[in-house]
Image (cartoon, rainbow, N blue to C red; front, side):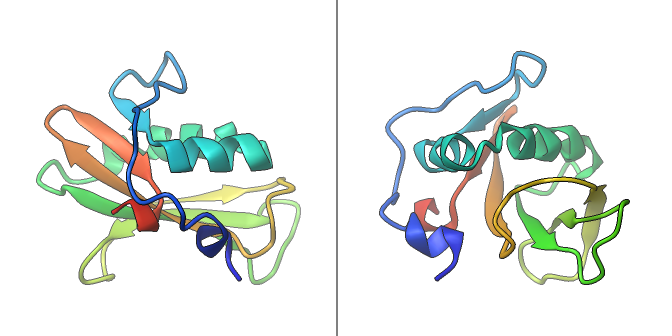
Length: 126
């Protein structure tokens, strides 16, 4: 069972959270905040927010995928990517994460644009 499956009880959100004052145009849902709290992963939300300027302006939905590096080293334990939703063929950004105690299976989050804001959320909240 993946992390997203463990948290699939989140099927919507009651509040949108500002998780970092430096990223005023990026919000997080109940589900993504729960992930950040449970796994000490506010850094993940911040990393995603920091990569969003690389996404095309006409793109309204991207997938943020944190996956375990196939060959972990000092420079990359995980790889974080932002890519197209459909089809999964355009990579907007990629960042190596050298250290994290995040669970090895990683996670997939969605990031949707709503007017002038981005919202980070779990697939079950889509």
